[in-house]
Image (tube, rainbow, N blue to C red; front, side, top):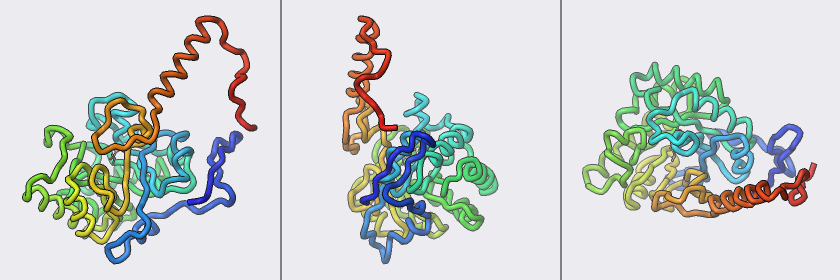
Length: 290
Ligand code: KIV
């Protein structure tokens, strides 16, 4: 994509240059996979804040307000304690900070599993509070009825199968899934059930590569891999992992920057300036254009 975005400091919006463009829609994302193939892979990253969305938006087809914000933003031990209030607040911030990508918001644990009706109420609240384009939920065959219920009522749903972090207490950890034939067959059946139910796309996380490819071939809708295979219809990563903000990341994450070192060095320099009273009253090193 050749479009660049400039930050309008008056409105704090990321303004596309040269011309405003329409936000990508869910049908447009769904149409990227034709006859089982996606010519242009779908780019998705997580975003949790308005500023992060402004910076990532131009480069992405989809921004995911993932419930991984529990660990990344709130320092929680897993995504299990994440609430609808958290997802609604961060989802709204990301929609405010983006122009181009379709924004998907995760349904948090406990907000959708009890019944399709519970899922509808939670998803409708997320859509109303945030203005997002759709929601994501974890689970395959067990969630197919819910996905059909939501899709039939105007809520685009992205599925999430394979390693499903909200089920960490059942799975016993975050290890790769699909290592046995039985588990592989179950994950393919999960994908097919979600696609049949109307999911517009499916995230497949933490599965062995042949299974990620098999899932991609097994369904007509786009399959977005995370730690699966480059052959999926698209890829997603947690932005903070990709930016190198954490020392420890899953093995499949490629780091494109070393932000942890940059932040630490900047903070150390600031602390040194304050302590030796050389802290400038006017920033002489960085002048943003007004
Ligand atoms: O919560 C999240 O960030 C996710 C992605 C890792 C797919 O679900």
